[in-house]
Structure formats: structure tokens, C-alpha cells
Length: 138
Image (tube, rainbow, N blue to C red):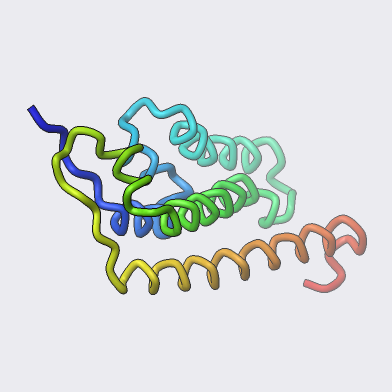
């Protein structure tokens, strides 16, 4: 009996769009993936920050989700640039099919790089703004 084939391009797409919630980890490793559950826990943690510190800046309320998405962008890049043979050996050992990356994967990687770098640089800039100037620049 063969296992279902997992698509590398689809996994990269899931990491780009819904990676902050761990959907790509659940797709690749199953429902009880520990790191996927950690991604998913960013939502209740953000809710706790909102509930415990309602006067806090909105940036801090969304910081757990933002960090989860930054990690997911890195995971998307790692998934996308891995060799097809290595991906198949890790995620498709008994599927009987071979992965074949196409041009859409390159578009996803470029998009992930743009969105991820803007998110990371913006997050770092906002943290330093809030910590050292008290939010004087925004």
C-alpha cells in the first residue's frame, strides 16, 4: 500500500500563505506535528497578550503571530530550495512518485523572499522604534 504523494510546490505555497498557523507542517508531517502545534499556539498567545495588556501597542499584540509567520517564511524557503530527491526521501518514501519542480516554485520562492524580508525588516525596525523611542516614529 502506497502513501499519498506530498507536493513540494503546494507545501511551499501553504508555508507562504498559512504558514503562521502551521498548515504546511500538518500537510507534510500529520496532525500532531509538534512544531505545527507551536505555530498554531501563536493565536492563543496573541489573544493572551491582548487580554492581559489591552493598553499595549497593537504591534505587541500581533507579535506572536508575526514571529510565527517569519519562521514559516524561512521554512518555505528551506522546503523550496531543497532538492527534489531529498524532499522525496524525507516526505514521500513510499509514494512511488517522484517530485518535479516547475517554474511556479521559483515564483513562490521569490515572493516568499520579498514578503519575508519586508516583514522581518519591518518587525525589527518597529521593535527598535518602540523600545528606544517609545513609538515616536509611528
